[in-house]
Length: 454
Ligand SMILES: Cc1ncc(COP(=O)(O)O)c(C=O)c1O
Image 1 (spheres, protein in one colour):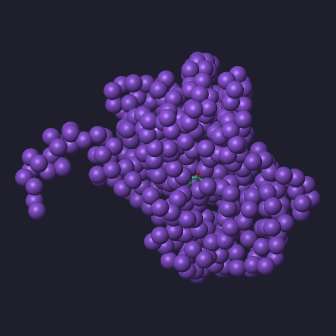
Image 2 (image 1 turned 135 degrees about the vertical axis):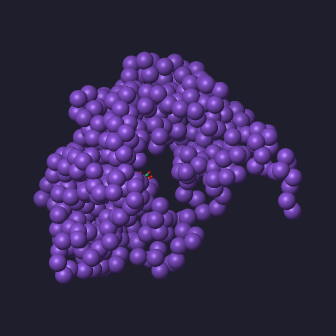
Image 3 (image 1 turned 90 degrees about the vertical axis):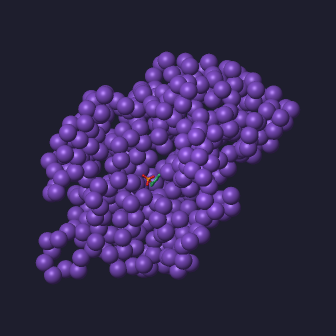
């Protein structure tokens, strides 16, 4: 049945009757382009749509301002709409933005990255982290002639592609044969990894992991010195497995040259993205020459690997933003700032939790450059309803903290504002714990992204 135009959901009048959330969900599956931006990840009083951002503040549709600790899923590590980065991107837009042959900025960006990261002899840029990590697995399969991928079970996300999602609970739509090619290993258990590699090492093309999330690596068991990460590197070498280090989050946060420099690692392939261009869409797969060169066109007679070939992979505005972000990081000591601010924020949250009788319930932990927070009920169990209430109440006072992603523009003023908001918010959490959280929650509790059913 066709509705008269004035009644159809797509007329401007009909749209105006609906909330932004309804409109988003009407035309975008999940209502957003990342599941972690979805409405099931936020309390009901979260702005449904954002108008813009500047520094570390975002504005909702009505112009209300929020101090943001989400920072575009960690892709903005300096600040929203940073002038120097914008200008660099605009220069590239004015120069054509995407040309018929490689551009100067493409060469400059590739040389900048390979100069910066010792384990990166060559690099290929792309638009999303997922495609970069998937490209790494393809290179590894081609290099080793093996079929399986081994990925860390304790790290939440590597790619939207089948090889990873097929190994999670949300595996619908992925053939079992594909899922079976991805195996998992536990973080910080070198013996378990070694046993697995002894048993199936000759099937495994690559091992994919982040260096760290919140948990610190334990002391090495197999490598002559160092920690679990050195064991991983050692065991990969022993079994001829390509070591893929996913630096999507750690890159340009733990250290300018990535977590690999912070921990003293030399992965075969590294992947970068997120904060590398302060919110512009740039990701990269980089690595040692003998592996990366499989994607070349010059090795006469050798069988080719079709490595990342995308129309927009080297879009000039993104690469201009990347180079400018690296300049800014160096000039302003951004990484040092993230470590310092994170330490102050972690201390602040934990002190306020103590002051408000929530020492067992609210904990900020992890590496100072990228802290996490957890909310637990009085029995010490992780509580999503309490987490939702924390977000709901902080939002009420202008603070958006779905997780903690730090940026250079988080400074003293923002720390003070955070303290004020915590003083207003935490008493509500204490009362809710005593009287029942449901009584204080105005909508549903947030849900995990990785769940089988809606
Ligand atoms: C560690 C890690 N790897 C890969 C990705 C995928 O990056 P993108 O969302 O740019 O595809 C993410 C995104 O959250 C990530 O956290």
